[in-house]
Length: 119
Image (cartoon, rainbow, N blue to C red; front, side, top):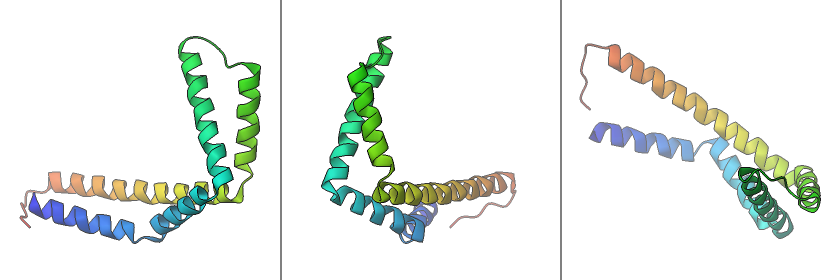
């Protein structure tokens, strides 16, 4: 288990130093530093939770709630900071998907191998 832990820590360090991770974190910091955009995103999240709760009860959001939700969503989507964040997050997610695929391929090879390696 120690060898796995060491390799996992090394992989984490490499991911943390990757362009994709650094771009995502930087875009996230810029997004959260914009107070107006952050407030819009917070309000949007509140409205989405309220709409989901109503949907769970079989109710629809009020026209006012839906109108506010639509207006906020339109405002957020055109923000260059938000677009940059989404692009960076998507790139990071794609990289992590590829990393997970490689881990799974390695696990498959390892489980099929008759050679046992320690360390």
